[in-house]
Length: 102
Image 1 (tube, one colour):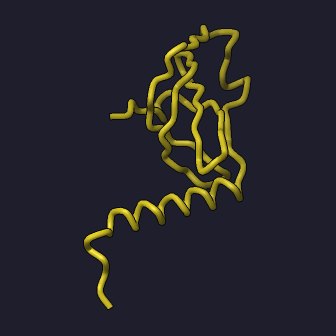
Image 2 (cartoon, one colour):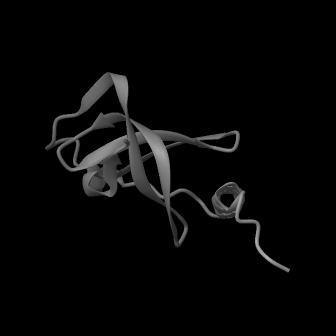
């Protein structure tokens, strides 16, 4: 039996979405600690207009790249919000894990 070349991209995206949803429901979302954030040293910026970003986050041992909104940041870290399925997530990640969305 052959593959569906006409809808291959849509099928791949649905499968990727299912994998991400499975990983995110089975593993806890990791975030930076207060000690890592060092808010006593680095000033915190909060944006009234969040930036759309692509960011690597970790659910347990699994790294997943997601589309998110950067809502706050310091020199070293970024506070993001994102949704997977119907679940809203908020976490802090290292700044170099974040790229601007195109």
